[in-house]
Image 1 (cartoon, rainbow, N blue to C red):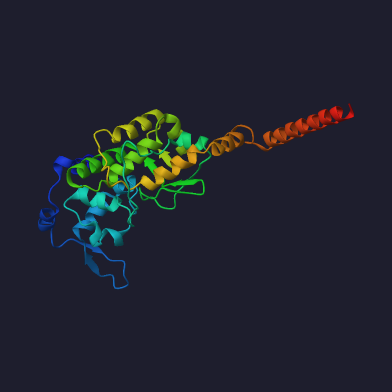
Image 2: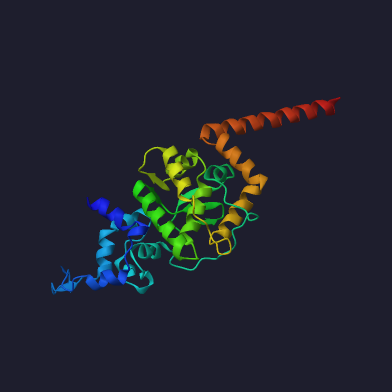
Length: 280
């Protein structure tokens, strides 16, 4: 029942202006304080929202931090606006363009085949993806129906009320990263995605469906530098050759020994051939 109520309150068509909710919020709502004086302090409406929507916030990677929730940066018009503001990056991002001529991010499988090392990011913020020295760090993502529903509601709200469509930018990134079920499987293998849905194909379909009907602002896209760096890395043949050698021939100590032995035999054969020609 509560879960259904929570889901209904996050639907775009059910949003009520936040100032109305604050006006009708009871003035005498208190909670026990854990201070030494054991005094009680008044709960703010935004604190109650934080507690009530805790699972939804965690599903979309929001840092469950009371200090930030109480700050002015998360003020919003209603529930969805507040949750969206909490999802936004804590620091300004370098922005660029996103048009048909601009490179897009390769899929996770393509990045892996090009020698990109995958790792879990140090933050759960949706915009914490970083690529440096061949290492792509992606924030840990919990793939669940709750996450999909919450993200979908925020994205639709953003399309109606914001020009800087950061959630749309993130969904575009995920759409590029996840092209098939193999991409989800590889993300789960590296601990980046926890697939609570269970089936990789279904998870892939849900991620691909999130971007449908969602439009990024082509003149204000926050992942342009990341896309360009990943594209440049994958365009270099040497990166693919090195990754192919490592993944298909040097993946175990015994495989390495076999390759070294084979190379040694080839070298000996060449030396023997050269010596034979010289003796003639």
